[in-house]
Amino acid sequence: MKRYERKKCNNCNELFPPDPRNINKQEYCRKPECRKASKAASQKKWLSKPENQGYFSGPDNVERVQKWRKKNPGYSRHKKTSNALQDHLPLQPVENKENVRTQSFYALQDHLTAQPAVIIGLISSFIGSTLQDDIARTLLRMEQFGQEVLLFQPQNKGDKHDCKRTGYEKQDP
Image (cartoon, rainbow, N blue to C red; front, side, top):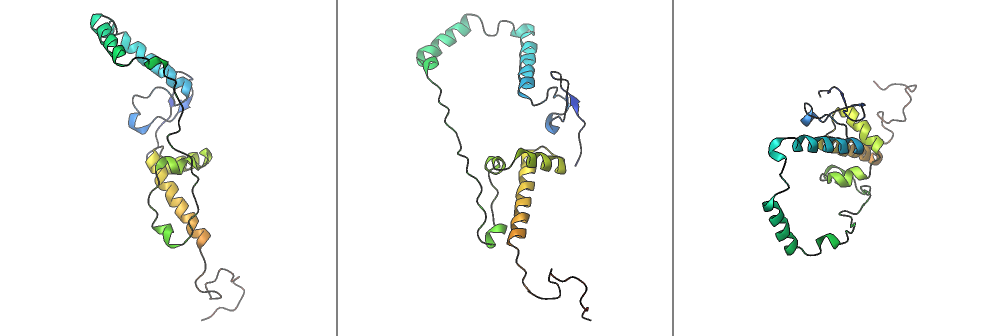
């Protein structure tokens, strides 16, 4: 996989890996304060164009806003509630061996929220990609390998291929 060069953030001046899909245009890193600075710079650039100077003013805009307010009385008085869209459910270990290979792909949010950020960063640097789909696929594969290791039981106990063999015994011809 191709490694991309780091760019210097226009706000905090730190080096960051740009998103591969937007590598030529991304000028700010992903920190919240830098994203705010990016938004402010973008709005300033947009408002500096002559055709956008009076975009939000004028009789047409005033009339549109007044009609909307009549259709939506008390909108600004509504209290916003913070209902979670998804409940956090930790992953449960697979109980039987047959289900290890037939697991369907998890929803990305469900799978990634149960893993520490360090693991996600390690996988991202290991595979050379920050795309969530690539990370989720790799994470699922690694989990399946781990389940196979944990559920592994030798088929032939005491055979010459048993892991307990030290190599000092007499070899069979």
